[in-house]
Amino acid sequence: MGKADTHVHTKYSGLHRMGVLRFPESVSEPKDVIARARSAGMDVVCITDHNSIRGARKAHQVAKDIDGIEVVMGEEVSTSDGEVIGLFLHEEIPAGLSAEETIDRIRSQDGLVIAPHPFSLHCPCLGERINELDVDGIEVLNGGHIDNFANPRAEKAALGGRFARLGGSDSHYLKTIGLTFTNFVGSTAEDLRKAILAKSTSAGGRVIPLDKAIAWSVGVVLESDRLIVRSMFGLDREPTDDPIHNLVHKMKLGQKIGALVGSFVYFLPPVPYLVGIASKKVLNHKEDEERTGTGSGLGHLGLFD
Image 1 (tube, rainbow, N blue to C red):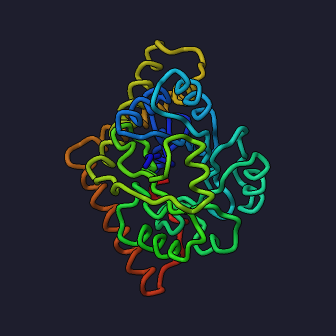
Image 2: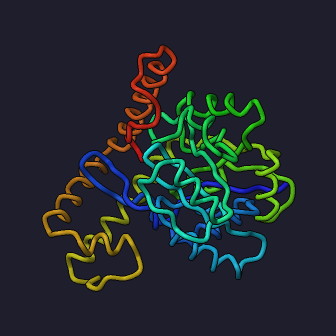
């Protein structure tokens, strides 16, 4: 059996919201993602940045010189109906289209359609619409979901055999790549494709521990602060191909100072852990609401996405 992490992000994934602050979703270099996936025992890694395939293109080039792992170019697309992952893509798909139009564009590239975290309580998701749409597979185990609702609900939805059952780490942090994965017969990207189409995949691994989720947030804030300080002292003056560098380059001085002050508050012990615990409590509350039918619906909280 081969293993594939079918949901991984790089530094090309855009911004993460943390209250009024904005930080990169990931600071992982594509080449480091490939190296980490290989060391974690993955045969295939799918790069699925938010609304971009730039990171996937770079990772695909890097992987050509590394034995033992293949890269699938993908994209996690923000549709008007929730997030949709396209795998085996060649061209970027714009955000903001309907789920149907997004799926049509994935199909036009001979790509596969995956519903990530279809019943998420904190990420935009398709929910029950997976049953109406032309979807190949759904994540029955998403490593980024620490609640006890989203993954079990997805597992139940996959019982009829209509969808391939996938596991993806949804990793924004190098050390969590491969903690959650998809099992398939074979070892190549083409074998993974065939297994998804045959609905013969299964999910393995585990949900990412809370301490590693906290480490991710600390890591992106530290990297942002490093780049802000360098720019304030004139050490990084010109735009580059690095999206995080360019983001900092465009910030006004007041925004930079505000970001540094906000991150200083975030780093005060034990603020990161309190934030993590509070997030868990919010999710527990949402679980109760969904089970009792008093919730406001799935997938549009935007707490961590």
